Length: 338
Length: 261
Image (cartoon, rainbow over all chains, first blue to last red):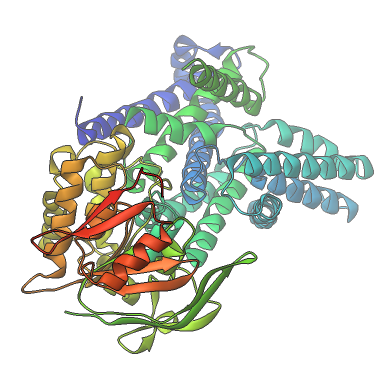
């Protein structure tokens, strides 16, 4: 068997290469689907800077950043709850963030203003992220309360499903009362990268950089948690405080992603799984590699969503749900069949 | 460095049952085996002594200071604790797992120096697990994994070691090796340690300097294995399913009784 170190190096370089390929493929995917030839022609055209530089590049780069945030959030969630099925989407944080964003959209239309994912300026986006963050934290808190902690996998997942359904229903109710929020909400529930512009890029990049640094500083605590909660506590860790910080981090990661691109399922669940499968290691590695893996998954899903039925687009959240659901399906079948 | 750990009137209720009911004991350097039937309160006592469970009444003191007043990191630099197996997810490698024993000395952000690396290497050598350093815990057998977890707690190099069933899953040669290691650590010429082990394997427990016999949350006996009152208490708490003898060398021996009693 290969040394863990060399497996990690190999996967690391593969992920870097795949991100590069994904970005280039994103630039080559336009109204005519994925087409390198059309891309070369566009490069020579006089609208190259607009089409490629201001529309496709922010979109692809944004997709990568959102994937990275989701992958990182998933790795944190799985580590802090000591549960390989924990995922921001399954823990109620996405549903909470979604409800908060719908509330903001509805409130804005009530007072006659218009905040939408498509037009939101800097200040609005910060407001949306803040609302989504509060919503995400509340969603996780609700799930944990209902599950009485994160010890039992089944109870945690059930609680996450219940909270997801309840908060989703609440969002539905709001759109009935405030139809203006419906259009924004639709794009939102399905997940979409089409609203990503340069304004969101800097926020996503800044958030990701901050979260990677903060999360990596807790890598040793997440490693200690693999021994069990009591063993981690016996090593001098203040688990209450550390857990709170990590939940805040995964909520912020979810909030940043959800506020810019809506609900995107399964990336947070699948990315850390794929990393563990191909090159397991401590959390210092797992956190960073899951972020990179998340970026690769989202770039792939983004290109597929734009190319599959071009010139029309599929919502990217639908693509990740199909891919992620398929992966889970295979995983379950393999486990059951031994 | 020696460390004195003592309890004063420690009582713990778990649900409606009294897990510990008024325990007054003191531990000095040396090896104490905590023994008793299932549900006697052995693991609860160890968790209380490790500062992981606050007693409902009474107090635990470390060198005269109440344990719960000592900051967590300082406590972890003094007391190492080994859990019963079962909680470990096993995704880390052996080397990464054992290195976690240095966490109390490094904190979350410290960089390991050569002293930390030597402590990890020593711990792995003592439990003979260095050859699997790069394998993941979940790829190991139960006994191999147990040796890694013991190495993890040895790597803390704390003056006090509290080990809950450290010999679980081990084959006979490794049980004997671990028993010898405990004796050596407890009587170490330069750094005698205070070692407390919860043990179900009575033949190993009898090798300890002192037996603390628990029964239904109380101390039934406390003393060396050759003490006849300790032997009688042991036979009684185990419902006379065992018999303790002392051989010609003055060593206590245990046998299971299958005859009609």
